[in-house]
Length: 540
RNA sequence: GGCGGGGUAGCUCAGCUGGUUAGAGCGGCGGAAUCAUAAUCCGUAGGUCCCCAGUUCAAGUCUGGGUCUCGCUACCA
Image 1 (tube, chains in turn green, cyan):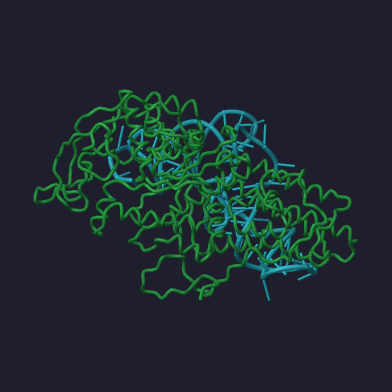
Image 2: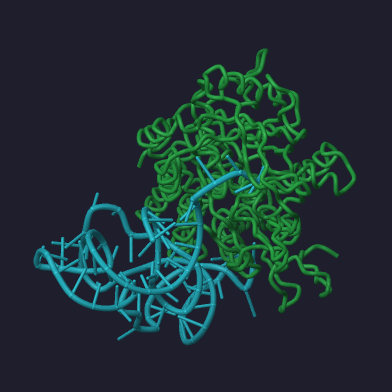
């Protein structure tokens, strides 16, 4: 394995989301995964900078705004706020939320442009294509069809005509070999490997120069040397990662130290932009390249792609409302291997909630803590001599950090969680075989078993924090752990649970999910025809 | 067409550089236990590891062929 550099800084980004409409589950998935990674690194002692935001320029925004009778900026304001709300609902702890309509971003984009231009990589030429006046957009030839009337039309039916306009081009072709050399020298630059293969194959096939400005659009960042042109959307959008650090802006910025980023988390649909265009832009501008681009897969609703026409589009806010923030986070992170596609359904979520959370971690905590409460008046017992079973159990949980760390070196989120939950199973077996409830035990032996179990729960809770910040916080409260005792430094044999401390009255941390209606359908956003049964246990 | 992934127990999937009776979770079935949120533990379910042919003392794990499936094959954010 080839982990990342273990510096003390960790700059991680989500893609900036296109607020042309309301957020959907895919946005939520990316945000949750990125947040879990960021939290993990932060707990592991890194100086983390977690960035997210919205990408607000481009033709689509303009068209939607026009249709709604508002300005593009008004549309952006409205929808960008929804993405902020989503982050809040999911409990992400990002450090900055960037909007591409902010002045700092204009400044950075224009500076990047100037540098690429100064390096001789930008030139003016004509861009030709089939243009639809109505759509204000170009279409590839194979997207268009010639009707019986002899008129060529784009997919939505408006006529197109061959149009050529001035456009600035970026000499992408110049970077083919440099990119290939970079991929070769940094085998983990693009993960997972399947995505890397696709990119290498694409680049090997030859690169054409890229049209990076539009003269027919006014909703974007103006080209410095020619304000009649606006930067093409990817030139604008990708730059956000650099903007947020301030390295292309005038003045001091304590975040300048964060570039280059350790990892860009993206969906697999935008790999090329991040793994080809973006590094080429950066090379041209003389900036360092991010260490890694990690492309995750998609989550499908019961294995089917979400689509408005099928009517299985799920609102992430509804999901959080129905199952709770932590459960949704945990499910998304555990269910699918990060990088592969996965699927979700009401049944699958409920199974995870009940099996892994309520019956797993929740039950383990409850069965041990309630016995400490009853048998030791809530005071953590001092362990007596340890048996082989005790030391084995402790060794198992002590080994967890190393496993989690090496998994997360490659953003293998599921591997990390699998390891933690595997230890929960071990702890249940330990508990069942040592039987602290057995009447024949001395009080000391009983206390030892409960001590060991509570210590295991403590470490499990610390390790599970990045996935479920709320529930684990409660769990650590139940173990009377101070804030300073919750980082990964507190893992392992050197930071055992302190005997003699008094614990609060234990209470359940992971509620069982009980269907209000046995016949509850999948978590689909229903077309309004069926009256919806409230699924949230506590909603009216 | 080219390139790249996949096809393993009812379901979802692990199986690294080839090596004893092929694993986990969920579900099903049968026991045990009673600390715990009707939670937990144990046993079991007897799977042609897609098919064919090879290499090898030995292949799910390598080679060739076939088949099914998915992704990429440039300006859509």
